[in-house]
Image (cartoon, helix red, strand yellow):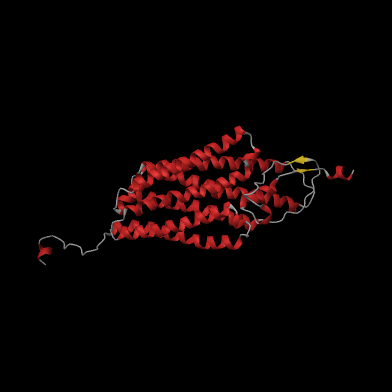
Length: 336
């Protein structure tokens, strides 16, 4: 009573955490719980709809690794937010491990995209100049991202206070460099992949198909599948990266930016296996088509050893290999 009369408030009980600290952590905790939970059914569906042959392919293995990294990120994130709401210190080892996981998962997802680029731009079919122009920047950006990831993890190991660690993760130069490199990497890959897709659409418009319209619709459906795979794996991450960079340079408050960053990480993680599942589900055996003129269809070449499109192969690999890998001869000439 004397404290109230003197105008002072009683001290908070031990373990008391202000609402201002809990509220932002709850927002991030909800996002970091819902998105990792989505990976569990995706992982189950990936195994259910895949074939034994596909499970031996690198693209499938990378998809599984990316999903497991996403689940691990969710566990680390929930534990970190729990400590934040209790105002408990975190170990330096935890900060380093969390930093590596948050940067490693998107990088591994981009390795899945690199395998897809390999499927439509097989190096052994390219000239040395073209091969260097395509794969040189991709390899250099991957190496730069790995080096920056190591520097980022070392930088994150200098604090044990959870809120300060989150602010450092948002404001450190290594984080911005990682987002710039990721944006350039995804944009360059998007240009490569979509240019091949546009080329396939142009050649499709020049084809004269004498069979039923069902075969033509099947061909167009595969092109649309390639487009949506490109959109989910390339375009959405690029857009989110740009929004993330704008927030990082315009707003020093990490509460809003960390939500965008977390969503961006899981968009990349979820996009890769979803594209694989979708393409497996949309694979159909195309009808045998007849071509009225002798034409050469541009090749989305097979990649021996990595992919097998005849036994439930991966998404772009099996779809692309059906889009035009051979010369088709005029049947009227064969009759003669």
